Length: 203
Image 1 (cartoon, helix red, strand yellow):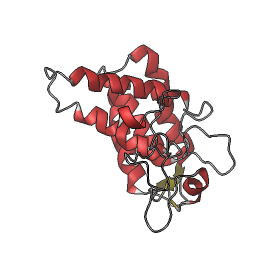
Image 2 (cartoon, one colour; image 1 turned 30 degrees about the vertical axis):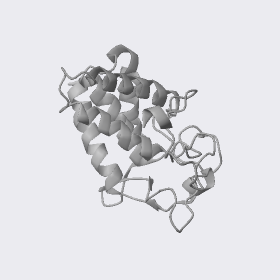
Image 3 (spheres, one colour; image 1 turned 30 degrees about the horizontal axis):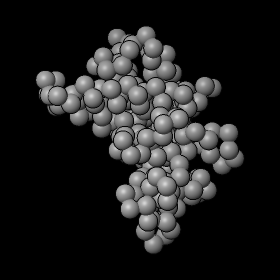
């Protein structure tokens, strides 16, 4: 996926890629979709740091996976919101009307950065501040205390895809129009995972 979906300028990965270049959402030149969707990259980021737990270090391709982790870390911190430390639904278009700071992408990237530092896949000195800010930003920006003292993490994009009968076309307008959910497990679970990694890093 890095080979076919990574944008050489930003280092971010497009949401999808069609080898045939025939899907209505795909570029006729590259086969990629139009935009960088936060959670799509979030899943990818989490998978990279998790698969390395089981991938033999002596394998010939081990270092290539670590290198992908390093390139991905460099790319996502460039689009990390400087004010809050979290990430937008459409990653590189934070200033566009309708875009919003999205919980699942933010918790996934937070987990990715924290674990990558803890496992020494990325340089601690380079990324420490970004990682800490991502977790604290999630707590301060995306976790809400309810009147009954329970916690809610929000907003989370309910679902997003490409293709299908609903004409999921990968446009900016499509991503920001998808239903928003509160306490969606796609944000809650990586938030818990990020909290574990945060605790390991600071204690």
